[in-house]
Length: 336
Image 1: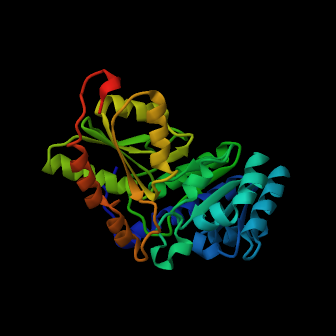
Image 2: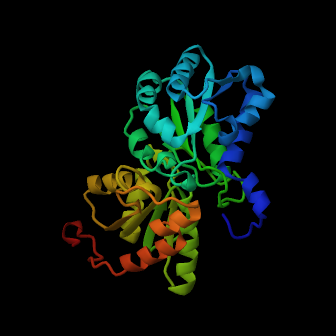
């Protein structure tokens, strides 16, 4: 995890989710001739252009026609190819929702959607380019595996896992600059299994995407400043979600805060809440994210601060949650 690793601003850009996705796809292309790539006229922006340069005969630009791209990818998959298609998250989940649902997931084809510029990472482009509802759409579609990597190395692992796992994938990554969480790709990534990036027994922060690093920084600060032991889970797989890790956190910390660059309706927080409610157990619970509104326009780091999903906002939420009153016993029926 971050802490012992140092890197410059220039190096961190090369370690971003988008850059490493482009590198991983080229690596897959070299090893597997059935891998093809598709873009809707966004090759440079989504970093899929790296594949185009090395494999021009296996690269297809359908133009500004995202819905058509999904149909083309479905046909390629039915023919035995493994298509990776890239566009902005907002276009992949909303503009192409019908094609994602019917062409890819209903037919359960082996196509992989790499959705870039997720959350508010393209903040200055405004609400039309903020993908703050895509997890609510994608995690409700049958057969679709949904992953939201925390950094570039996790993106590499997600892309490789997508190739190795049959069926449709939706991998949600940021626009460009990302904070580095992991020192390398060998930390035990597994689809459907959360990664504990910081141990703790007082409260659990469950985060995904760019919010994992912020939760990790908040946990380190709270340990030094307040003496709190905050568990941080990198819930990179939104679907299938790691129920075991969630219920373990409920039993061992009794307080949970979810953090996501997404609306609090239908995303990570809702997925975690469903697991908790179905278990019949109670805990102090709060969802941090976009609070049923459109996000402000600006730089990503400023928007995260305004939404309270940066380290400072998380610290404030943890301190408030530590004052939640419940009985720390095993009688789950009288928590509140």
